[in-house]
Image (tube, rainbow over all chains, first blue to last red; front, top):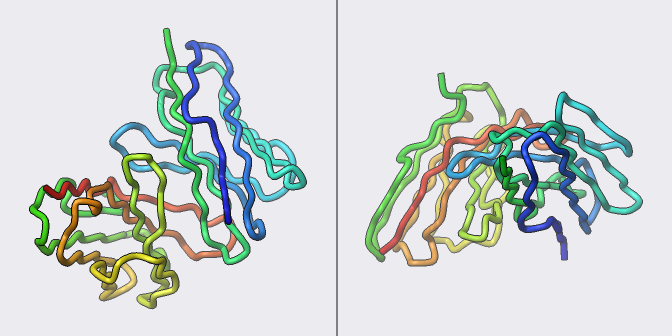
Length: 109
Length: 114
């Protein structure tokens, strides 16, 4: 079967750095996405990786290693508004998105 | 101007009733989706339409019937509602299915079946 694994919950301090990991086992690979979802709201797009390496976008960076089936989302200079769930999703060989259950990130002052 | 709008936002109903959720997108996207997000927060694809044609139909009960009158609209009708149907239903759209096509989600419709 296809599987996306992420930690259920993480806690970090305002101003710090946090890394959210995602490992995947899918039938084929056509890109990996990270979405942010605040409580009670819709998911919103953060980043997309299809080649190995690091993609940086402001305070957020996403890394991909296709050989290891692994990605992480790095959030720097954490702000209280970063408290949300972070969803990892992989497009399989049929271009279907397989979603992880998300990592709930709690930011403490 | 909301990009993907779905109504109603909240829906509370009794078991056995029939209900509909409507979705409209003004992004000019070709592909629309219905997702179900349960209490464990997994997003599960239910249906996907590309230019009014059904392209993804996951294993959902046939009590769920999508309808796409045009590529800007994708509605979801649910017959004979059951307790297990309680969830948040998200409509989404994207330019296509392949490539780095980002999904734009609606705000969600929280369905509670009593």
